Image (cartoon, rainbow over all chains, first blue to last red; front, side):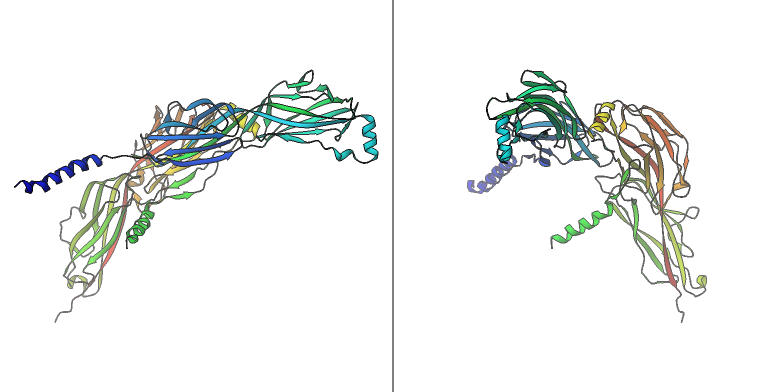
Length: 280
Length: 304
């Protein structure tokens, strides 16, 4: 008699168990909506879901990574179409090689027709910039002797700059190597190689001892240091160039030194992701 | 084998797909949903050979072409048979028309097979010659057309900055025209993005792009609504009364041919931080009629 009930118990037990495993586990699968590696930054935006019914929630996460430290990073969703979000503005420092994932959540407003929505965001930050220019000054005798033997070009001056959207072009009124006691003009051109908006906040030029600063229109002269008086504003991809005058000097036949140019720039990028909102 | 229904579904879904029409700076691009809401299909007489004095049935299918996710049900759907020539309907008519069927709501993707029984005219009535019974009927339904268009507003400083940096760009708006034969066309008079706090003008025109007609060729008073987003001020529209960002038609609007006159609305856009996208929504309620005709051939019988 008892054995007759075993299959019933077993079935009952199975039903109970199935209740436990039947609980809906909704896995939120984020989809990558945008992924770019530009200028100083790699960024990726993932959303869930891709189609959002009216009044439902859109979850979004922004992944940021940089090979250099980006200070005062400001991430702001400023045009969110029919979405309403709280805390849409975040500020932090993005340390070098330390990726960050910033989550956001938005509520879709009511739509009567399927609506293709662009959510616009802005990223701005400040970052350091550094460039080095070799300055070669020769004594009169050395210069004349090399000039006669046609060996002036044996020593070449290099220019190196850190990878960034800011590109500096230096040009001199005379070719290097310079002869001592000459007045040399240096033109500094500023170029924005990136796709965002650039502004130079500060810029310092450490002038080596083989040059004596005489006049520099955009810069304040403080001994061997030149400091940019005002921030440099760009028009299109270029900012107005600067002109400096130096006098060359040396107490050795060949004087090779480095002119260091460093500063900070503010960079601003705008981009968007597209999400569809459907009527409920 | 499993693939066949999938392919069929994909093909069918094409019926409600949207069409994209390129626009310009002041004429928004269009994403247009199908003009057909209610359609009549597979109209036929059963049997196919109808002889004088015999009974036959007219069969046809009515269906809602919309997608349940993006379209509304049709309301007050009426199937009215109004002409049958010398053929005689089995049902009694009221003033020469027969209201075959009515539905309060007809859901997207719903379909109904309808039939109506007739008796063919007698030999004497058709002078023993072949005769065509023109059976004419219509499907009448209420529907609401919707259009929304995006408006981008930019603040003065951002615009100046973008001009300085060479990144200022014209914004090309898109209007989404929902399912239905009456489409609402929206056009602007200046390029976007609109500068904050500026006064702007848009025009609205209704067009019949379906195969049927709008009942009485008019949109009734109160049945065209324009909703402006929050923050839009100083809104005025021709032939409409506006309050709280909503404008309602205050007189009947007649269709001349397949379109109405243009309604012009002026409005002042709000102050924004940087840039913001808004949506202007328009709704129109109308009664639409589609006609169908089946010529039923009646053959005389040979008497011995």
